[in-house]
Image (cartoon, rainbow, N blue to C red):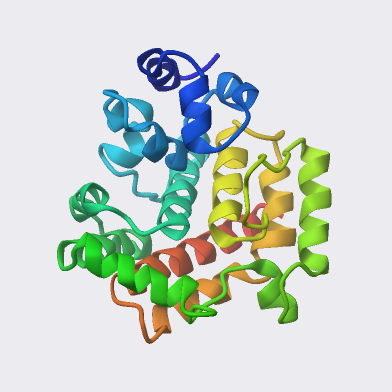
Length: 261
């Protein structure tokens, strides 16, 4: 069963055709989705549906991970999925004014992740959409190449489209995740991997345990270094806080999977 927010988004958009066009995926993928991805929310938000309906955790009251016992595992996974979704959204494109306003309302706590949320909120409150757009260009696009190259293959081999990408595609095919028609970025882009992890953790994609497989094989080997580099990048101002958030979250994921071994 799809979440009420997905049903509401499809109702407002008059079916699956328009959301599929905006998100850039096949229509069956939209109609079968139980949960709306962060990127999907941003794409479909041209309708009159409030984003907090589709993803209340991300666009409403922010989820902040805390120390929870085993009875709260579902809440932990929901928080993990939303953290990955937030990172995916911020790495896919520069946030617009509305997104910056929502980010500025984030509240943190005394935990490392809570402090990273507070730093992100502060960074969002001190910038504007034009500045962040230029920053995003300098960091990830550039004239020829940005300051950072956010692809797993590049971080692991120094080149794009190498064996790490092929191994990722093999594992995604086994899980049943197919490349969307019209998607130009390779699947080892940091934003795409975070979006995949969000779907795996939430249960919208794959089977139980697939999140661990993808994390251990395709996220852990390089993404922590990428976020650490983003924290230190010369062009990073707003995105320094994104790097901090990603770095802290990768450390938490590493520790959690290690404890579960």
